[in-house]
Length: 342
Image (cartoon, rainbow, N blue to C red; front, side, top):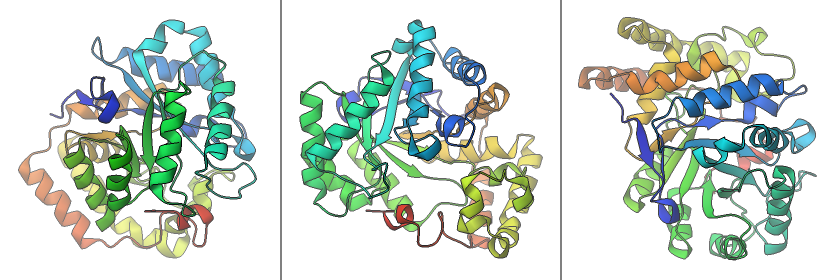
């Protein structure tokens, strides 16, 4: 059984969080955001499932809304306005720093200040911004300079802790040398376990930094519910991702077939098997699956009850090694894709 809780790193090392967090992106980053009632019920259920004194790691984004807007933060603000007692029971991490005009990432003090102010304005003081991540790494300046700028904003009281997103192991080390990094957010799943992923996980463990592992079920692919591109909504960004294109999708079904077979043998859902595996990669690993549906969220959180034996881990390794995943994690040529492992 996976531990029920985990510790954050750096300046938040005294904070205990649930071993599995809650990604909020899917609630609002679509043409029509999910209804507040649905989102609120899921968030509450997740928090209520945790042991007393443990915080739920909530992961949101400044640009997780239609047209890269602040719908995600506005929803979060409304939640805490309605349920103020839950502010102390949660740890809010928000990604920002991406220009709404898609001009790229900006690590300057001016750009970061504008981003953080935009986040705080959208939150309306209903919840403190616990952790800020500059989404991806700004390749236009040394990471040391960007981290110093974020540290300046911490001193100004605009947020409490610094996180990283989609950075390389080397960049994580350089950033942490300037200011303690609390968490690094990267994609980790059985179909996204690249050599650099392993290096970041190892560096984070060495430095005492938590890894917020997003998309632990391969953006829904590893649930088995997506049999073809037709199963993905018309306005869903996965339709543009390389791994979901027909020529790659059908090849990648080989891994899914073996994954579903192992989940069936263990009598757990395929999603639970994936989340449990990601969580098993270290005490600092915090999978952050996303769902607006309470039923799915509670199923995800129940992954802490899935015990993976050494035989299970060997079988998973065999599955991963026998299936090469085709297609990149994002659309080929996408600006976001170009900033991976900065």
